[in-house]
Image (cartoon, rainbow, N blue to C red):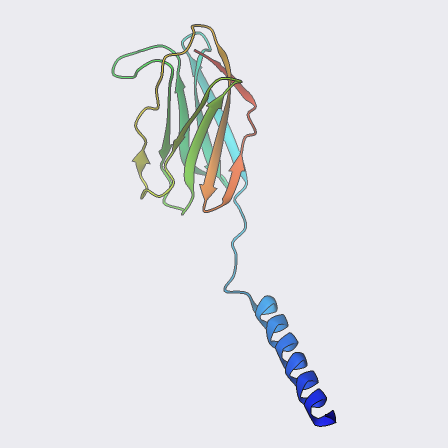
Length: 150
């Protein structure tokens, strides 16, 4: 009986050490999320915007909200562009209580521009715009700090 208890204790201790070692070593080195900075350019009397994204100071892409049709661009439309081959995609989200529209380059090789994400909205509707860098489940975002209009 004592011999069985000693074997169980040894087995449990060895398992605990193995589990601890696997947590300590990890599966590889994780890279930290980049520091996101932006510049913003508005047009159509401030109703439309392009948010240019920079990862650690390097150009990463943009998120574009287009309120009214212009040239080949439709109105009430959102798109994203990934211009940096850094492993991070670009995601734009525009929303209010009734609208939730997303454009994301995640899963596509850079450079890549999404198709316009469209749908008619009531003229003058105020929306919040978020622009993010995304990788897997990680994201670094502006935090819905920009208002745009339909």
